[in-house]
Amino acid sequence: MEKPTNRLSLYALIICVLAILTVSLCESKWNETGNRAVLSWDVTGYYFYLPAGLIYKDFRKLEFKDSIMQKYNPSSSFYQAFQLENGDWLLQYPIGLSVLYSPGFAIGHLGAKIGGYPPDGFSKPYQFGIWIWSLLIAFLGLLLLRKFLLSYFSDKAVALTLLVLTLATNYMNYVAIDGAMAHNYAFTLYAAILFFTKKWYDHPSFKGSIIIGLLVGLAALVRPTDIVIAIVPLAFGVASLKMIPNTFSFLLKHWSKLLFAVLVMVMIGSIQFVYWKIYSGEWVYYTYKEYGFYWTRPYLKECLISFRKGWLVYTPVMIFALIGFIFLYKKWRPLFWFSLAFFVVNTYIIFSWDIWWYGGSFGQRAMVESYAILALPLAAFNESLIKSFWKIVIIPVFLFCTWLNLLQTYQLHSDNGGMDPEFMTEAYYWRIFGRTSVNNTDRKLLDTDEDFIKKRNNVNVVLKEDFESYRDTSNVRTGMAPNSNRAIFLNFDFQKSPVLEIDRNQIKGNWLRVKGKFYAPWKEWDMWKMPQLKIAFYDAEGKAVKERFIRISRFLPTEEWTEIWIDSKIPEESFETFKFWIDQTGSRTHLSADDFIVEIFDE
Image 1 (cartoon, rainbow, N blue to C red):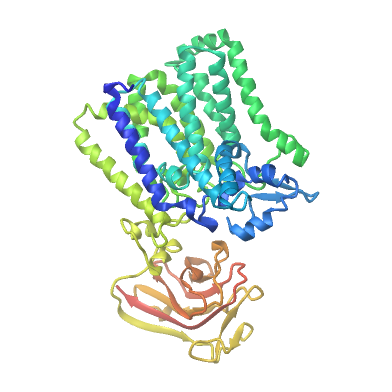
Image 2: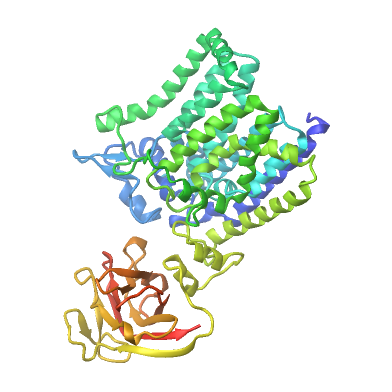
């Protein structure tokens, strides 16, 4: 029965569970289809081992993949695997999550058989099974973390720590909505490693060794870089450098138990090696191809404070966890060194990855699992806070961070919430800050940092072009324009429009706007291939003084002529000419453009 002194953290745990469940039910991702379903995008890659091995018995050819992609559309393309030279297919993502998904898969498979759904691995019961199992994994992680923290910190500090981690960080997103991603499962593995490591150091046993070896092995099987969590059991309780020999002697004394843990860890890790050996012929196969780590120059600034994916921009409350290392060092030094060592090494690895923004995500999603370890300095901060005058200042900050986190989670998942999962900019961040809906004009700031929305004065038209008498007819077609006969036409063969130009002496004002009418029979959804309206100011030597662009497809409905414009402040630097044009950037869509107008105006 729960001790009365620990009831506050128990109530906090219940609030966290109810909050996660509420957000998850509101989003109801298990009931979604296509690329918004539970089994979509990267999760599909982690999960594909289960249907491949248990339903279709086909790891080599993955012949079922085409029917799955066509029927369920979990992602825009089947990027989760690649074809070898011999024609066989190899899954790109590690097998670890499939191992951890297994109970959820079993729930889904049983539900499909009983409910009359297709037992194909992707029908609704499987979506539900993985969803509910992922929620249970999250609840287990919070429960284990609470139990561990209560061994060192007060009930009030633990309660506040659980509430802050769950409600005020992007952990909420990755357990309540994207719970099938690796971060939820890794967080729980980390929390379990903390819990069972303490038990092992209190009472070393072979059973505890097996559990720790199993947990560390699973963490590495989920993501190989997560092997860094082994720092926790190896350095647990070291309060100073002088204690390292004592810890080494303690581990040496229990060498047989330690060996047992290592053997179990290796056995778990061998599952991946066996898969690679059987299906690629090599014991170790690097499946991420051209992607890797930039060890000599980690993306510190970009990962910490950039508006694209800065950790402390989108999860600012974790600043207090970093400050908490000071308090952890002063009062809980046995917890300090292993948690700091883990944080430094793990963060260095995460920030060194080529794709430092980690694709479509909310903030720095790769940091989420480390919150289980960062809960220690955060709890240390909270322990000092609740005894301090500063709580009347910091608690409102915690509440603000909670509001911000829940709002941005809504912005990310709402159809018109505005949060871009991959390409946020500073200008766009502040444009949508605090808002629950955006318009197309706002989205221009995803590509450019300038968009004039105030009243314009002294508007002067310096160029009009309807292409009726345009001299270059190489990609001008008739019968396409909205109010005339001729318009620019671009497709895969014609990737660039004619470049239109204006002399410097025609430009007298503070701002410039280029607008035109655009039409496409279908929309380009690949952001990297979206046609762009580009503008540039050039000096006398032909060097660009200033360049801007917007992606036209962001604002273009299907089969409807639409006026689109781009604004730019006229640079103070000397320039000779201004030019603008359209670039297809590899798109195969058929794009028509007409009735260009260039306006100069003042604020």
